Amino acid sequence: MTTVPGGAEVAPCDVCEALAAQRDAAREAGRTGEAGDCERELSEHGRHGQECSP
Image (cartoon, rainbow, N blue to C red; front, side):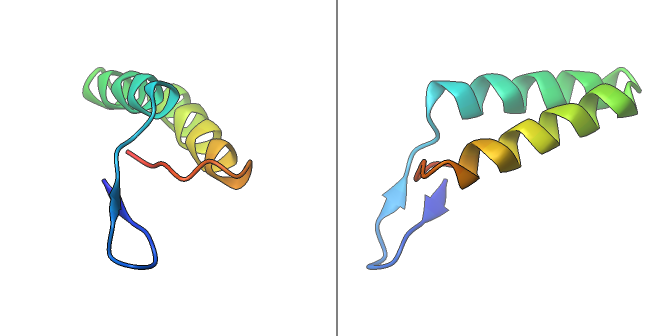
């Protein structure tokens, strides 16, 4: 979870959760390129005004 100004915690959205799960599975399987792709998608998702993060 991410803490936002004011101290409130924001739960990850479904997109964040799915990308994080894909990233973790790729890391465990040694697929570093795929894990990097998921990381980029997660960071881009956050830049589109979503107040969420895994």
